[in-house]
Image (cartoon, rainbow, N blue to C red; front, side, top):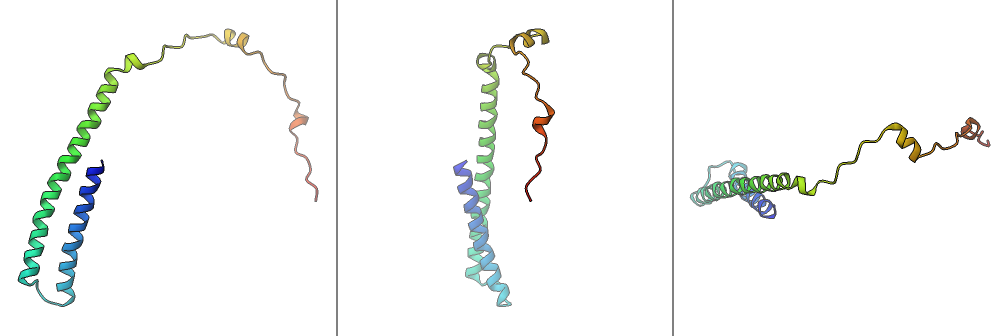
Length: 114
């Protein structure tokens, strides 16, 4: 994931540089100079390469995620806790005796002092 974040940050930096070149020419109401056009084209080529690397890295991350899930599913029977035996209501009642009922007077609101 760290590598993917670095690649996306690199892509953002390239696009920002391309935008700066374009905005400079636009603000000066002119077309790109030869040097600017060459720099823009170089950034465009580098952007395509970074996009390819991002796609490859995202694919690998998905494969890794799927393989982890698959490995967890394969070993799920080994790691699962033993099943809890079903119990009836009567047996639970024997385990937990009922508590004495609280009187409603205990829960009345007290008048707040004014």
